[in-house]
Image 1 (cartoon, rainbow, N blue to C red):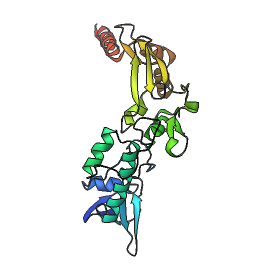
Image 2 (cartoon, rainbow, N blue to C red; image 1 turned 135 degrees about the vertical axis):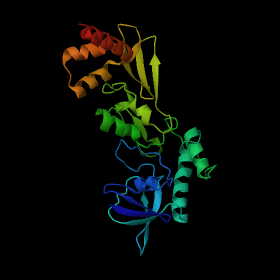
Image 3 (cartoon, helix red, strand yellow; image 1 turned 180 degrees about the vertical axis):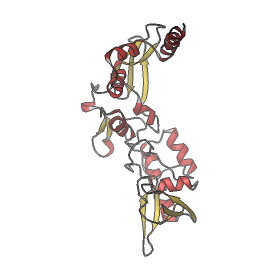
Image 4 (cartoon, helix red, strand yellow; image 1 turned 60 degrees about the vertical axis):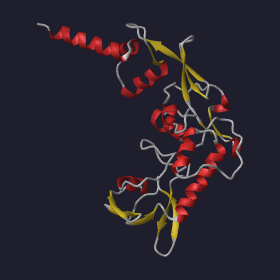
Length: 259
């Protein structure tokens, strides 16, 4: 165990913890945007900057991925740390001035405006945190999207900005997006699911018992590969929605229980 002292509050954390882990255990808030506990931390947004006291000198580090290797003294509310986070937030406000999520977080930090001119961007409210890329690669194992372009033209995109054949229509990217840039749309006229703004469309399934629309075929195929179930079991799961599966299972168990 290591002892981390954050703004005069000391907490013990196990090896492998980060400064952010220690701060949360101590009940100290450090703002984050690119951090998700299920994904690796790449410190893209830089909003979690804190000041590390090394005795003879001090250093700004990102709390979300700085590992605790020995006893540390950290300041979240030092003037240098606060100014660093304010600077990052002012840049974010310049990039996505209409984002409600960013404006709300900025207000919590006492920031209502930015001294920088607004940046022209091609994706609505995207802050380039990279969480969507990480979840697609690390959790789903598809890598259907990634960063493209440079400077103010940098975006998250499918290859050549075309509908991706690798996308399975799971919507995990939309689930982790902190600012709502990515959304899931259902096209009932064509019975498809669309991941916007990537224009990826996949066919939806229909429960043969109740007619309810379900997830895309590709999501079920991914489930099949991950669970390594038999073909017959897969076909059975593919035909019914979860509610109907439970009813059918209950009926089968009831029949088997009869003498």
